[in-house]
Length: 381
Image 1 (cartoon, rainbow, N blue to C red):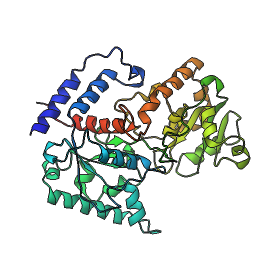
Image 2: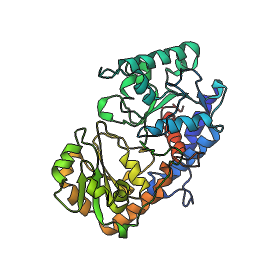
Image 3: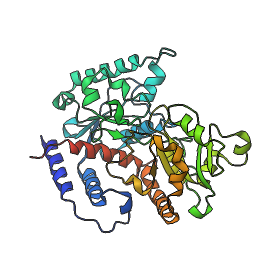
Image 4: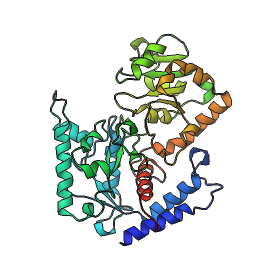
């Protein structure tokens, strides 16, 4: 098919990407290979076409929710369905097919409180995909390999388990990017950045932070105690060290003097431990507030890990090394820290939602990762 030939052409062109010596829009140290990323992004802009299925009942489908910790799936849905550059009405011209359902709406509408069963959600997805594959020829052509879903709720990966092709073949763009569970597949699936949007009308409100010289706190965390990592963090560091501001919930007397956001803006490092699942909205929050994220979540595939060099702007700490956390952070020299924090500031534009998408912003980075991983599975003869 013509669309397959276009993908093969793009993959060959990316493999032969010319070296980028300077680009005013891309800061090379943030990327594993800025030359490959730039060529791939350019080919995406030139070639990629996406078909969005109109099928699916509201509010389970086509109903984006734009606030809360699962807002990433809603913002992507909104911006994708409004898009005119990549979206086509003729599915025969599409390289990728979007399944526009909301995992958050599935949880809200279909979960039976107290049942501890995701089965109703999984049944809906199974029947939804079966109806699409029966109505259109496109799913069956690749067994779903050129289809993708975007879902941020913690349960998103698990609710695909009643449809084998959906679970194994479809590109799953999910916040819960945990390779240890055998559902998320590195190199095929995409790690979705979890963004906590408090005010949908102003998703970029209060971003920015202090320079390194005005950050008096070494490390900060405050949050609910759930999952396997946070209780260990609290046990080792709560009230034991003035430099390590680790709280279960930010105490009222402290919050009255300095808010949660002000703590992040005043800290050198923001601790981002996993909760029930490996993902955490604190990673993107740290980036928004120019705080170097410290990620504690074994088996977590970080967002855009196929193109970004996370070692340039973050610290990844193994769960077993929590007792040595302060020692690890103090081992980072002042010069290196300033470089990392500067990189965080330069990285921020790649994690921002915009009412109208802007080149290299979060919407485009997500779409690029879908495109990039799809090309990884295109066979060039």
